[in-house]
Length: 375
Image (cartoon, rainbow, N blue to C red; front, side, top):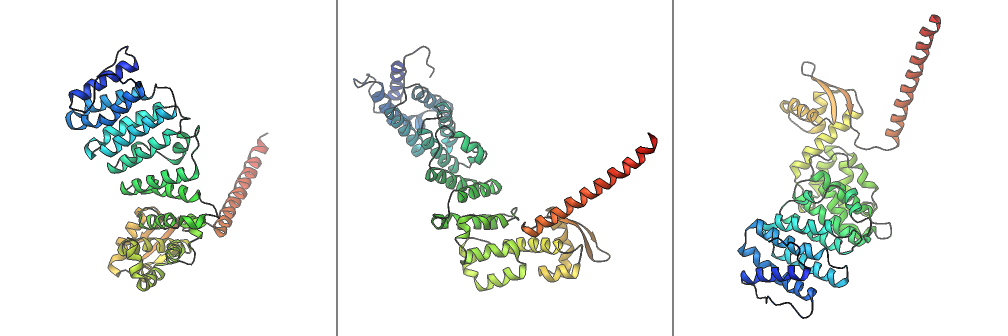
């Protein structure tokens, strides 16, 4: 359906006729109450096309409705119509037609004035639909872009938390763990010391997601978040602390004493052990330039025959850079990522930079001495 030089009232009339032909319970006559009433009736029956038309036709018809909504004078009544349209698509969109509804609502979201508060409601439903069909990344890139989308109509803290929480759920379900972690950290940062205790569920979800993610190893920053600080003294905080700074033996002891707790969190003990082996290896590499196979076997609780295979897998992660000497049964460490980055690491970084500075000054003086006699 294409409208060429038709008034909004005529466009609405064409849509009513179209839906009437599809069997919708709607009259073709114009409402004596005006365009808003006609559009309300159209939105009430627009889902009839989901059963009768093909996907391309459905998208065209729904976009025709959008084209009317976005040019109507901004008002509370118009926003109520938009909210009704959004709700209709959300409730009636089957998984097969999810992408169609997602595209239509995205057009609606992008077409409205950025100061219109109804855009929040649209975006929230976009997330809900995207979660159903694993397409969250099609509408969300990062937190910075999200904030820019609502710069002209700033969201309340509660609204932002609602969006971030729903985005996190969708990203986790879609296995976008790296982005999900950033979203959760942003969510937790919206809480203050006064209300940090209210974020207990979010904080626990953040910890579990981070621990379960096979690619997340730097967990130290989580401890500085106020909602996670509020969990201090609870088992979940103790577990996080183990992954931040302790060795495999400490985790093993914790699991033996709290097996049901760890399992109820939805965490896999074997995966936890695998991650703790890598974290323990990193910690050993931080404190030594050379590690024997015997030390690795003992600290990581692995069989002698599995040491070389573990080292190879660990080096693939690039968390530790090293060279393996099978003959001498040793690993020569070049560098490693720090599990924690506190004052000692800043001191070490300062020492390295000062050494570089001294070396550069020495080179500069040497160059001056070589150049000077030639003048």
